[in-house]
Image: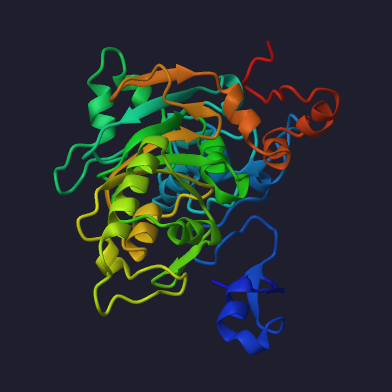
Length: 367
């Protein structure tokens, strides 16, 4: 099978690898003819790549599935398409880059898909328990999953199947998790470009001098992974305890061999002895895997408990431990920056100029 004609575009990944050749390295990509990746197992008709007969704007197949009633995230939708489970106008599709519109017949596993425009956006706050996994499927190791526990609630089995998680919390963490039936909204909420704040209460064991708090604010690189700056502070009760511990430590004669570090502080291996637990408030705008635990570990702090209390405009008010609470989706839309919200609805940019208090999008009542 002959490959489609190509055009040359700059590759940021190649530029980063080859360094001195930045701006020269190029790669071939298919033209915007709907063919998508070159590994397609079947051709795609030109009729499927055009706008729908009704004249509505066509969108990528993965994006449409994320907006459907399947409760899929964008990445999950791409995997479903790649597995050959999707048919468009009776034709099996393997490329999530295919453009489809309201006029196309879309089937997943032989069942018709309801487009996002026919239902309203729903957002839920869940209070995750410690030692449970955040996943939609089963765990190969047999661990308890959050989805299975929520399905045991009265009348929640079908509802949970239509919801997708906004981000993740690791197995030993607890606290706020957002769920929504709009996979595209979930992707925008969890993406670092949205700039949404995530706030945590973190209990650590070890000394927390001011230079360690400043290290959070500067950002850190741990094992080659760069983490953006985070706001960190000691909670009021813990601050008093830390001050008392610091006074007691200052009264102890300094031992021979204890030296000053870069920040003019004593060696942590000496100051941490006999230390107590301290509660920190940490706020960040990205959610990389085990981010807070790894940064704390690099500073000599052992995390014994981690609770997420805020995400965007939501908190745990009214949501009991292990519970699920339906909340107003308008908060999620307001938490997104104006550019992100405008991407959800073409009319938002114009509406935002006239009305700044609330910007409605498709599927959310303006009342």
